[in-house]
Amino acid sequence: MSSSTDPSPRLSHARDLSRPGFYVKLLLMMLVNALGVYGIMASYGQQEWGILFFLVLALLVADYVYFSKRAVPAKYLVPGLLFLIVFQLYVMANTAFVAFTNYGDGHNDGKEPAITQIMKTSDRRVEGTQTYPVTVLDRGGEVAFAVVHDDELMVGDAETPLEPAGGEVADGRVTAVDGAEVLPIAQIQQRQSEVLDLRVSMTDNPDDGWLRTDNGTMAYVAKSLLSYDEGADTFTDPEGKVYTADESRGLFVAEDGQTLSPGWRVGVGADNFSTMFTDSRLAGPFFKALVWTFAFAILSVLTTFALGLVLAVVFNDPRVKGRTFYRAMFILPYAFPAFLAALVWRGLLNRDFGFINQVLLAGAQIPWLTDGTMAKLAILGVNLWLGFPYMFLVATGALQSIPGELTEAGVMDGAGPLRRFWSITLPLLLVSVAPLLIASFAFNFNNFSLIFMLTGGGPNYAGAPWPIGETDILISMVYAIAFEGGTRQFGLASAMSILIFVVVGFISWLGFRQTRKLEEIV
Image 1 (cartoon, one colour):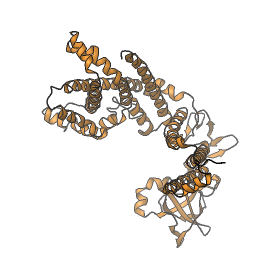
Image 2 (cartoon, rainbow, N blue to C red):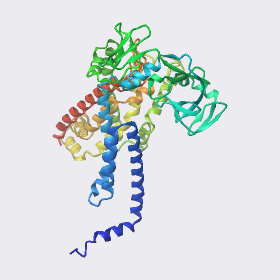
Image 3 (cartoon, one colour):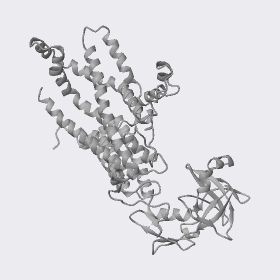
Image 4 (cartoon, helix red, strand yellow):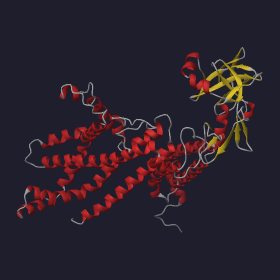
């Protein structure tokens, strides 16, 4: 028999249906499930089985949690856990995986796409084949070709072979295609490199050739000059030179060392980690960046904390007139976005027309940002201006939390102001601010925006394989290797990211361990 105080499941369900909040929750969950199903379908189409499994599991968990009355705490935990998995754990795991591969320019995809691309980039026109009036399309931001083949409108792009599509044809040329934009001559000229580099396979079989164009108006069938032997896993050129697959490097290599591009992604073990220390072109700049990163992070913390603490002590004295106004003024640099402030300082420090050289220094030509040593001093100075307000706020709050009785006891014992500060105020202050100093060190160790906006890492090292310079810290060096220069090496950049993670993690662990000793004085 059910208790009179506990409603039956049927009555509870009826009560839920009468609440507007239930329908709001139902609508939100419908949207979540719709997005989840779309993601599952997209993952299935791309054969991303790991993402598909995660989305299915996440939807099942979300539906159970938000439609069950037994999982009330999970209703608050599940969103955060899902975001943690997607934006933290997945990113960390993927970075660790990439660090042990040769992923980068020339090794962006798997072996089969690499073979197809090699064949397409070494092609020539097939004699006696038909010439097609071609229409250049923009389909979802990607260039595509539309032709009339066997009296049927066919459309294809770099990833998709020719396939039937809906549209309009006039005088043997395609004039409109459903779901795509026909590019006029002016836009074809603007995207000339994309159009001329495009190869659209005639069928799924690469041996049938592909369409390409030399002028954006007529297309022809081309085939590769190289012949691929699937059994032997080799390419042979018209002169008989054989390129054999080197699975350890992800390349087709001839006996004389010549290679075919592109290659494919393969695991390279710890090669990316050893490259940082053994490659003569990279090892020197890497060690210099490592030393400068530590120096920048440590000096930034010391200088900003020292200035912030001095100002906090001065303006914590009730005898100072107008201290509320001054405190508000000191916080102003902290209110401006750091990247915007760095750009302003970049203009102020310009050697030729900057305000500092031209006005404050009467036309001096000091290379604040173009000389390595001066650029480092400029970075520390700008970071001091940006960082001291935070330390000022932290130190002010910590000072106000120290009991006045301790200072009075020091006075009774005959201790002077400096003695009271070093023996009473500073130790008690460090108990509160030490974790924040460690966090500030970790932040400055990865202070990418200041370096990038103020100096761009320059002045650059001569002969380096990437645009890396004397003021680059490790994180900006990672960015340069991954996204700047002639070759982008994501595997090497990921290995350096792991090194940064280990260093910051170790310093943080060591710092927090030492902080416990300070707590013993409380």
